[in-house]
Amino acid sequence: MSAPQQLELTQIDLRLSSLRLTHPTDLRRLHESIHSEGGIRDPLLVSTDVEPGCWVCVDGFKRVLMAEELGMTHLWVHTARLDLAHAKAAILHCNQPRAGLSKLEEAWIVRSLCRDDGMMQMQVAELLKRDKSWVCRRLKLVRALDESIQEDVRQGLLSATVASELSQLQRCNQQPAARAVIEHDLSSRECRQLVQKLRDTRDPQAARELLEDPRRYIAPAESGTGRTSGRDPRLSKDGNRLRSSLLSWQHACSRLTDELRRASDADARVLAPLIQDAVAAGARAVRQLETTQSSCSVNLPPTHGEPPSVSPTP
Image (spheres, rainbow, N blue to C red):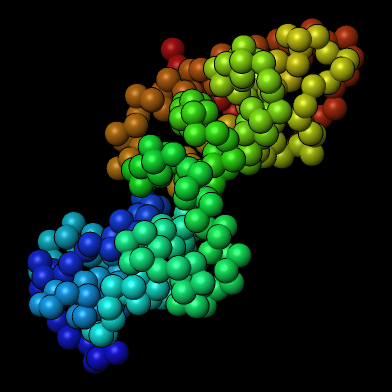
């Protein structure tokens, strides 16, 4: 690897960026780091041997995106003489000391080495310093996953973890399940339950009902109560649906509270109308909860933590 040198941003070749995911959260974190440190300090890694005269980025794709957004014209880079296959392998190796790649990103690298570079699975395993079984699992993942789902992951509509769960379904069932995950904002744990229930059912109508309203049939990922999901035999069908909604409410409130605490003033101002609507909806729900609670003939246990404080809008 060479000593750092400056390179014009327009010279950096991003042909391998399709092997990486760019998460908005990662970009926000990087943006904050750049502001706190006064610039992009870590040099990129580029290869000069993929193609003559080209500076192909191997590590630092997010830094390039941020540099473009900030209007920068130059970045510091290290150069290495890597052919195309070794450049792809370096993407994997460069990220090991950090959070690493998702399984789907690893699968994209393996597929590219096999399909585009004509390598055998054993050769890929040797190049990536992995077992052949690891290579086989990554190939199985990417081959099982519908291309539209992979594109949803690239667009940030689905996480790589959710995509891995969806790969267990037949390709024809992956898109409807993905739509349900997106529309109902299911977590990866909730997606795992959805996938399992879809695999267990043989009734097309039951599958359609599950996809139309998955939260009726699965537990929230985190209820914070220690209570488990599933059907309570003491309850009617409507009662079990209410039980599911109550568990989901606790998860939604917890998640919303965390997101509100992290929200910037600028974002909060833009979202002010939605926040006002949410306050009104929350107030109505709290009033109905209190009405239902007061009408119960049994004494309910005290709630944990602070009581809800919601002020209805006029």
